[in-house]
Length: 295
Image 1: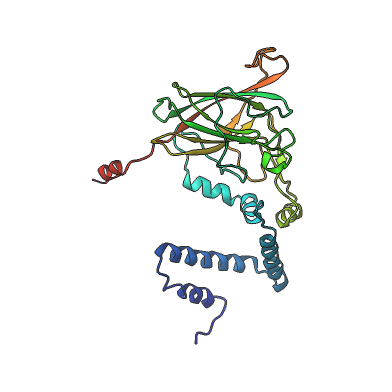
Image 2: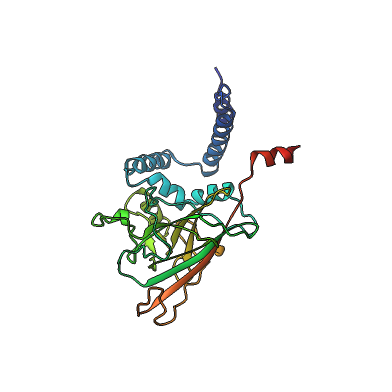
């Protein structure tokens, strides 16, 4: 029997994972124990504080439902979600930067013709979005799938509005022969992440707000290229500098200037805004290329 104290305990716990068959799982658990024990030694929590931490995690688990994942929120507000995204999608010269997809993507979103109005008559400041999809070598990508979804002028997605009977403020578009796309929508609003549970309590206790700046989600896919998931942020939105989930990257902040009076693409009068952005995808590395490089 080992005489365990504060120093030998960590080594003993790590040794208990020695028989783990999966090398990756063994490395993860070993690192987890080492860092978690180091955190406890650094913070030196009281028994009451540790009990409160365990209770927080238990309440976060109870707050998870089919439409809400409190642990994802916790990962978001601690910056872990964005850190994982950054590790797996390092910045490459000229390639559009990524962000996590968020919880409101739908796999069965309908495909609409270029220029269509995905707002489906929802109120808000009208927005014309246009841009292109190209490869890193500058080659336009015809037929690329541009999947788009966003919140309305009050910060709600269609999934949060049970009165809506069809997909609204979300659609898919195919780029034309020149890799171009365009559609009509409304200007999205900033909004708070769900803050009625344990994560909201954490934000309140630490003097943080729950708001995200206005943004539009994009998932762009083309044959022979890595799929891109990202968000575009109107430059005049509040909370760009202190997004609750740390999702804003300068390259994804875009101007949305007013359009010319009477110049909205459908010919209607009234004020409107224009958003233009060109997406650049990273080419997939084929197995043969990897083998040649290794050779």
